[in-house]
Amino acid sequence: MSPWRQGLFLMWRFLGRGKSHPTAVVLAVGWGTLSMMILLAFGEGLKQAFAEGRGALTEANLVVLWSGSTTKAWQGMKPGRAIRFWDEDLQALKRSIPEIDEVAAERSSWSTSLAWGRSAITARVNGVFPCYERIRSHIPQPGGRFINEEDMRLRRRVIFLGPELKTRLFGDKEAVGQTIMVRGVPFSVIGIMIEKRQMGMYGGPDIAKATIPITTYAAMFGDNPYHNLVYTVKAPARPADIETRVRETLAARQRFDPADEGCVRFWDTVKMREISDKIVIGLQIFLGIVGGMTLLVAGVGLANMLFVLVHRRTREIGMQMAIGAKPTVVIARTVGESLILAGIGGYVGIALSWLIVEGVQRLPIQNEAMQFLGKPTLSIPLGVITVLVLVGIGCLAGALPARRASRLNPVEALRHE
Image: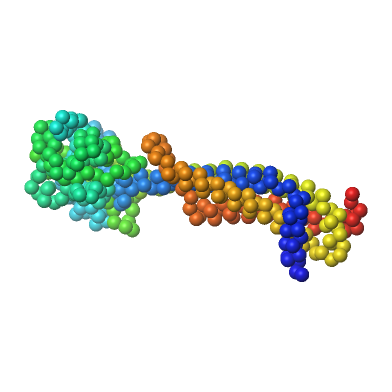
């Protein structure tokens, strides 16, 4: 019989005789595995919630520009001059920077009255371009649509509602096709935005806004400066690659110092995405370390138990080595016992964590904080990580006792009482 087969046989024989009393150690390993899996599952849920929230803002390499005021004198003009965006600025960006995919603008009225029947609310109304459906994830629910080019050209009085506004105005009733009053002017509801959980935002969440064609907005509220510009960047270019050129293009038209950062403020959503990804990864690593430390404590208990077992079996080990058992057999036996106990405890912990996560997934959580954090989620990579940690803990827990057992002197071991 090979040394490894002999070691496995002796290990099974030992465990089967009930001398190891492994229940407490198995439970400790199971608890450590459960803790690690649950913490990693919550970290994965948070990661997915962040990804979903970012997608609610945009799926593209989006940049939002806000105008400011000059902080430096330039070409004979004093500092403090207000910068305002107009259609000429939008067209200049289109002409000058080929890396820009789509560019648009917004006009906003912050407190506009909306009424339908006996329902009346105050909400933010935005005048936007049709490309907002793509670059700002203004996706309509089935049965509705977003603003199109004909709406823009004809200055139609059509309105696209966020789901929160729809609920406040119409409740459970159908809204598409209805006519609502916007500052006393009738508008036809053409669509309702899909529900979405939004992490990044400006001017409030999209679900609480109403959207109309920007040409209709100008006819109704006045042809005022744009409140902000938005543009997307074609891959593989990144927003940061063209930021200087965007500032220079606007500076040439608006006559301000290109180095004056107070004139134009950039919100690069790609940078925001990278920062949030680093935060989430750091949090996942932290949660994994906390769970791993809990499992490591169980591993210390497993190693202590194996040291006691090696001490109790000193005569038995000496007898086996006296009749020819090699040190590799003794090592295989001790490490194998450690791995089996770690495996049993790990299986129990993984099974319980799966049951807990599945139960939490089915809970109808309405709390905003819990929706922000997301629901715990298990995945194959998390399972692989946990199994690898279990194997490592099992090997480490059995290594020192195995080394001690393999170095016993057969003659002295046989004299042990």
